Length: 634
Image (cartoon, rainbow, N blue to C red):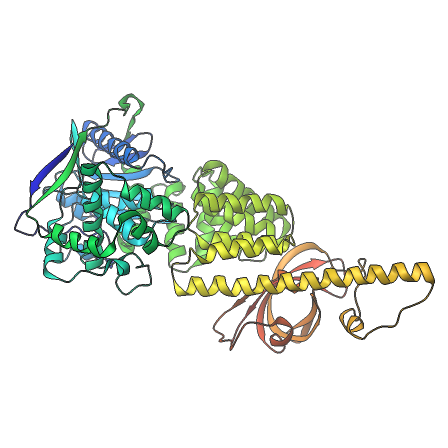
C-alpha cells in the first residue's frame, strides 16, 4: 500500500555511519554494578544494560527488520557469517561511553545509532531512548548494504540508491513504512545540477563523484531519487523496470545499455527525474509488519560484570577507541587472567597495531585455553603462516584452520587461508582448490580469493583455467591497484601457458625422435634450437622434491640460470650460499617490496643481483632446496 506524504520544508540532522576516530573520553569505572542481559535470537545477539523485557523487544524488532528486508530481497542469501551483535544502551550517558570519539566533541552531530562492519564481525550500537523521525536510519542504511554485499553485479548507484531508499524505514508493532522521502536529498538536488544519467550509471569506487565519507553528495542524492522514482512508478504502473534492469546486469550487459533497454530513452528519464524532485509530495510504501518471528526461540541470560566488560572492550577495540578498550582489558585480565574473550580482543588490538608476534601469542593462548571462537583459531593460523614453521607447528596451524571452518562454516577467510596453506606445501591440491572455491562462493566480490584460486590452478598445471579465473576477477576490481595486480597476474599466467605449450611441444618432439632412433638406429641432426632448449636437463631422479620444513632467508640472488620453465639460482647471505631450484618458475609466487620495476618482471633476466626474501622448502637433494616464493627488496 502506497501513502502520500508532504515534504517538510526544514532540514533534519543527518545521521552519519562513518567518521575519523581517535581515543577520547575513557570508559567509566565500574563504580556500582550494572544489570546487563543478553538475548540470543536466530540472527542477532542483543546485549543491553536495560532489562530483559526491553532486550527481547529489541531482538524482536531486529528479527522483524530482517524478515521485512528478506521479503524485499527474497533471492539474496546474505546472513553474515556470525550473528550481528546489537549493543542496546539504555541512555545517552552510557551510549556516549561507547560511540565513536569523533562525535563526542561539542557541536558534533548527535548519533542515535551506528552500524560497524569489519572483516570478521558486525556490531550495531543503538540508544534505546533515542528521538527523531528516523533515529536508526544509519542502521537500516548499512544493513541494506550488508544484504547487497554479495550482489557483485550491482552498480554503485543502485547499491547506494537502495540503501538511501530503505534507511528511512519505520518498523512499528503492526505495520512498516518504507521509502519515506529524504528531505536532505530533495533539497540538495533542487539546489544543484544533477549528473547526466549516463554518468551516474557508470560511477564506481574510483570515480571522483563517489566519496564514501561524503554521504551528502549529488551522487548519493540522485541515486536515492532515481531509485525512489522507479520504485513508485513500477508500483503505480504495474511495471518491473528495476527488476528488468537487474536481470540485464546479471547477464553482463553494461549499466548504460541495460538502463536504456529497461528504462527507455535516458533523456526523457532525466527530465522526468528532475520534475520528480521538484514536486511537493512523495509516496511511500506501507505494509503489514512481518509476523513470522518466533519469540519462543529467544534465549535470555544475565551477564556478569566481567562478561559485559568483555563485550564492551571488544566493541571499543573495533570502534578504534583503543585506550578505552585497553583500560577495560587490563581490569578484566587482572580479575580473570584466563578470560578467553579478553585474550582474543588483546590479540586483535596487537594485530591492528602491527605487533604481529604479540598478537600471535595472545591468540595462541586463547586457542590453548580451549577457545570456541573461530576468529581466535583463524588469526593464530593466519599470522603463523608468515613465519618459518617446524612440522609440529605446521600441524597446529592446519588444525586451527580446520577448527575455524568447523566452528563457522560461513567464514570465507578461513577457507582461503587453508587453500593457500596447502598450496604452498604442494599437497592435497584438489582439496585446496575446493577450499578456495568455497571462499569465493561465500564472498564472490573478494578479488584476492579469486587470484589465490588462479595461483593454485597454476600449481596444478591448469593454466587455461587460471587465465579464465583471473579475467573474471579483473571485472570485480574496485581500485586501480586491484586492477593492476590482476592484469599483471594475467600476463604471468599467459606466459606460463605459453611455456607449458612449448614444453609439451618439446616433449612430443623428443618422443618422436626417440621413436625414430628405435625404429632406424639413426640419430637425427639437431637444428640447434632444440639443443638450446634442452641444455643440461635434470632427470626425474635428480629433480629436487620438497620433503622438509619450510623456511625464510634474506640475501642476494646470484647465478640465475633458466632452462624454461625450470630455474636454478643461489641465495647468498652472510657469506653462505643456498642453492635453489624450481621445476617451473611460472609457479613461483613473486612480490615486490619498495622496489620500482620499469616493466613486467622477467625472472630469468631481472633476478640477478637483487636483494630478496625467499621462502623455500628442504629437499632430499644435497645441491638444491625447492624455492616457493621470492619477495624483492631494495
